Image 1 (tube, rainbow, N blue to C red):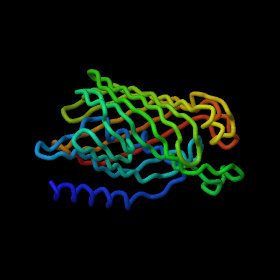
Image 2: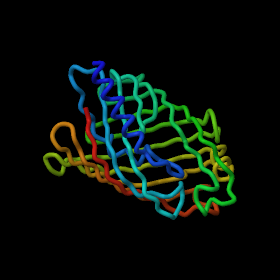
Image 3: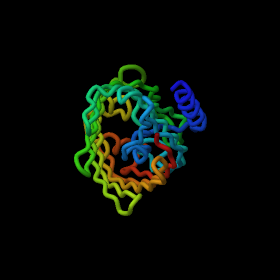
Image 4: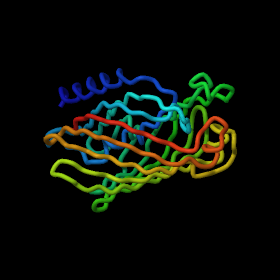
Length: 257
């Protein structure tokens, strides 16, 4: 068990070292394609893990019309179905651990932004990195997956409330290939929008659709191709430096254990 834990930590550090800094990240949605399918657990190990590395193209900052390439490291580790540490899910605890449902508290990081990050941000205010604390739920019902979370900025650049709602439907289109279609809504509170966009108004800030194709190789390895696009709303849309839509395209190669 100690050897397995050491290997897990070493692999996680190796992947983390490859991660290039970016203006502002949306890791949760960019890496979602790697965590949509259940992972494989070793019967004699308390650890479950999902390690992947990928590449994507996304807005240079939230709401940007300019594209930027992203290196995507997925490090998702879970101990005894209880505690997890993940570049996609954050740090949290599965308080509710039903057969098809996980729910509990977690901590996420909003990396913030600086006026020097992009030319369109020149003259805007800095938003410091923020620790966000909140609650999440993920539930599977047949071919459906539903997820929701709410989080509050507790330290750093903003003290606002944010919420996410999502649903996806997956089917196998070949023996080892799955097609997953989904949708996502992001709601931002007035305090968050005031801190980030200078407009104190609660709003649905993003509505998007996505498609993921997951090809499995053997029992543990996989390749995921993902694409998404949607519309911005409220202050996220009407800020002088943002556009009207959002987009993402990427690929992940990973190993689950």
